[in-house]
Image 1: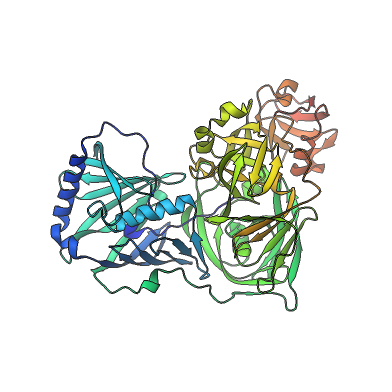
Image 2: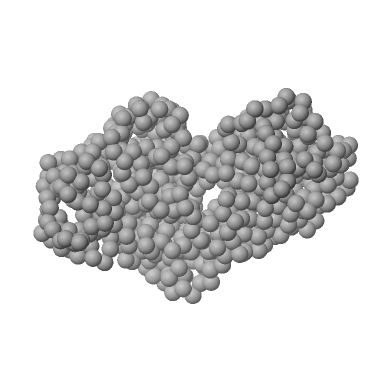
Length: 621
């Protein structure tokens, strides 16, 4: 799974997150209410009672980019609507009282209906309505947690628990009685908001300077208020999800579909596209992936990239992401206009992890959301359908989904345990289980994994997991027996998400030809010739990466076949079965090390002492 920066417009009613689980000894509820009463008195007292709406404009800054943002809030119901423009990025976000939606640069909008989004929007509405003062608006609980000291200031920390939402902490300055700080645990990381420059508007005091951080100041976002007014008239239609915009693409005339061949390397789909009429460029095709360009390709196309936003993916670290815009993206004769691309240096990933020198970037979501797409794994074809003519006529099993950001999320089970599973053509694995889900259901004990392996690598670095085999995976009405499962132990990154059970990738998806219909939020799974084939993991106990000298052994499983043969991490394989590695692709080498148990594979190693060894493959799970 590869994801570029995800910019969330927070403004005054920032999307909330789950608070820290443990708390110190709490004082009585009356203490919390007394603190909130002092906060209300310090910021306007009874003046708050007459406020109904709020309209804010200001300057948004992030990653070296500067832009404008505007927001309208219904302070009685929690409905909100906000817009932003930040360099090439623009969009909107709203909540109509029951549904949260987002809108991107293309004008297309998406309903956000995952559990994560529902809880987030409920808690945001709780804050927007100041329901900790007015519990008749949105019910919830308030608890006193502890006293904290930061930078010489003393704080009373309160925990808010909106009904149907997720908790968050408010830090009240003991000297000023103002809220200076908010702390929230999001799906994969904690967000800290700080508030300053309180000013009086219509009898109440509000912060005019806001900062949003996930721990690294380099990627902080700030919002500076230019204007704020209360009790402005609001049109109810403003909060509704926008209608679809006019088509921004050209589909080949008189064709109902277009077939594009693809190749699979290491469980990833690659196909060719043209950008601004130039190319072809080899791109990874990821059903949930944002548009990404290698910086060298952007320079080749004469594109100007702006900013340094934080990009993250399966790993635990972040990378700088700039943004640019292209005039046209073309695939198989289909032309999509005015596309925003992130520029992110994935060259090392492509060369070392994929073994590719001609990698140019990533496409996916922007195509899937416009066109129904069948991934025909059996024939290595991606079939794009004209949405105006499309009607599914196959015999596959229909599986409805909701969007988790850009990614389809379906309800399923793993060994009978229900959960939400992301469907990800950008994953090489069969099934990655998220660390919180693993812990909640005791899957380390139930599945009894015996080895720790590198399960993949992407934006953010390499991922280590415990290797296991489940008995069955269901995705709606679809069932796969005995999938290989990687049990994540990550504390950051995509697999630290508390709202998902796991991520389903190539090892499972390639057993089907799958039609993705994003417009109607449905998938169709048609079994293909690979459906009954056993799911196989690496049988060598090595994680290999491409270097100029050969295949570097980055990791060796203790007690595994390579370890028993005498291979050590850091050595470089220069020949396999007598053939120099220059005559192997990394993908084919990995396939060789998945050969049947008992197969003998000879490797020549270059290190302090060159030598040749024989690895006897066997199942690690």
